[in-house]
Length: 258
Ligand SMILES: Nc1ncnc2c1ncn2[C@@H]1O[C@H](COP(=O)(O)OP(=O)(O)OP(=O)(O)O)[C@@H](O)[C@H]1O
Image (cartoon, rainbow, N blue to C red; front, top):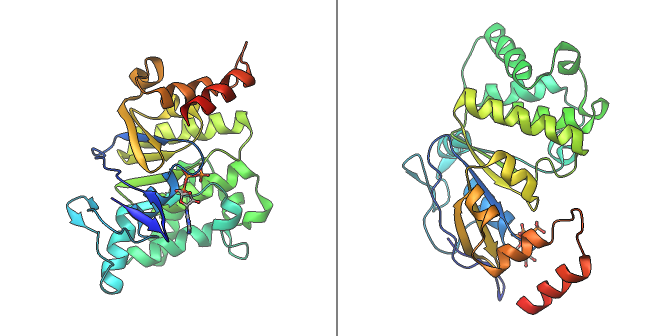
């Protein structure tokens, strides 16, 4: 698929397949086109060219009517980096999850409330959190709410755009573990947008490296991270701070790539 903004091409040529239940990482420097790619998938941006198909349904053209929009929304859900912005501060956690159920599934109120409790339980939240406004929760808890809300639609694919980037490292680990469990239990596919290669190693089977709106390298995660072929991938790996890391070397490698 392709996307231009004015005379700047944000996504030139990106194409991939996500088998059911698998997890694909999309990595690349800031501005490489990661977010634009997933925004096209979920329907927040319109592609200028190419085809998008989820579960056999073509979604390259804009949705026609409410039923079609809803059906598309059910198939792919997104969790953003900042749940402060994506959760309504005036709506309790329980109501926020319930709204999604009301939108997608006709159900008796009692059954719906039970399902809300079940979804919150799945992400490690209880009655106390269900009754709270998002502002009363920690960052990690809010991200759990965003995950429960996305799961409520029972999507085939969950897009996580820097979904753990804003969390403390220890909370990050808990949320990543939770996501791993959910993938095993629910069999949902993950598209994980991140600049963090440690996260990629932990949570994805395959990885796709984007540079200036194009895929420079793609394949099984361990292979790419342990033996990258493309100089740009090597550069991304050498830019990760670790013992003995020298920022000057990483900056020089970046300059030599142009
Ligand atoms: N709405 C927009 N209008 C104009 N240009 C845009 C818009 N959205 C993105 N771009 C440009 O498209 C390019 C790709 O941006 P994109 O956000 O997809 O990159 P990214 O890899 O997700 O970066 P980051 O990690 O910083 O979010 C950038 O050069 C960006 O400035």
